[in-house]
Amino acid sequence: MWNLIGTAAASILGIVAVAAALASGADFLSNSRANDLSRLSAELSQKVYQMYSMRPGIFGTAVISDTIIVNNNLAPADFVDDVNTALVNGYAGDITVTGAGPRLHVDHDAVPQEACVEVLKNLGNGRGFETVGVASSIGGLSGATAQTLPIADPSSLCTTDPVAIRFTFRY
Picture 1 (tube, rainbow, N blue to C red):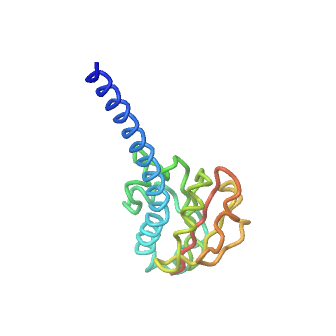
Picture 2 (spheres, one colour; picture 1 turned 90 degrees about the horizontal axis):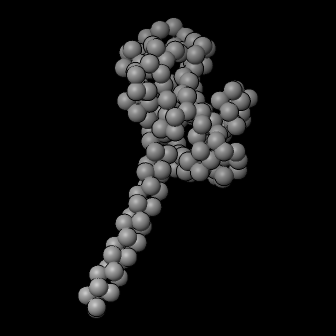
Picture 3 (cartoon, rainbow, N blue to C red; picture 1 turned 30 degrees about the horizontal axis):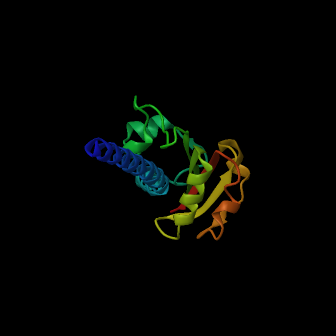
């Protein structure tokens, strides 16, 4: 009888431990994905810069197509969809890369509000980042106020769920 009670208690404790490990693992993966957003955006912008740096006007002012970026292997593997045709972020949102003279915008759509706060909280000066903008959709980023880094209160910018984030790099 006591063996049966001990075994049942051990099983329940085991289930609780596995559930806790899964919950903390999901939180870790979410934070990791949020941190990868800025790191991989910096990597993408650096590769695009290297490709365009010898051209007059550097980037121009147009959208740099996904085809150009994917076919020239400029995007990190985590930013390319399963069929190697489009740029997507870890949240299945679109990524748009736009030239702006000596600047490059890397825009992300469909970023969860919690991830937005995490990204902006951990984003400091360096790695080529000049400013960051946040809007409720990728279409609203052109009118978003460019925020200098570091961001003092990320939650004041990430007010909708999901959001779009623009990283601006200056070269």
